Image (cartoon, rainbow, N blue to C red):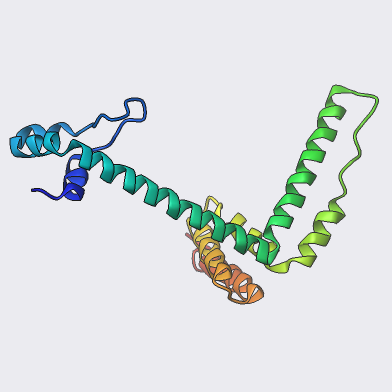
Length: 179
């Protein structure tokens, strides 16, 4: 076997973060002396391959993050998430002051601002609803939420998607009402 990619996969070869320039190899390589000699002879090529793979993975991750950020901005999800985060931070600050018994409380956050932003960006609101369903403990509800998230992300009509998501879970509940 002389293919570096196959060797890396077969013997789980990697470069430790703390020991740069070294290779860690699965102990099953001890049964194949020809592979041991190949790894020793081609150490630098294997290191170069590992570095290229890591760079490729980082580039893919960066590309995905940029696409996700652009998609969130296109539907207003970034603004809605920021408004919710700000509301929660202000509410927590108010609650902490109240629990401490401070005489001076921060301004209580205005929930109407979040509702206004939800109304301004209905697709983002629908996506957050589907996302909350996807985090449900019930497997059917979670599955329906995941499907809805994917469909909204693919550009389907958000109102129809949410309606079908709820209908799917209700159908399951009605079918299993006596279980």
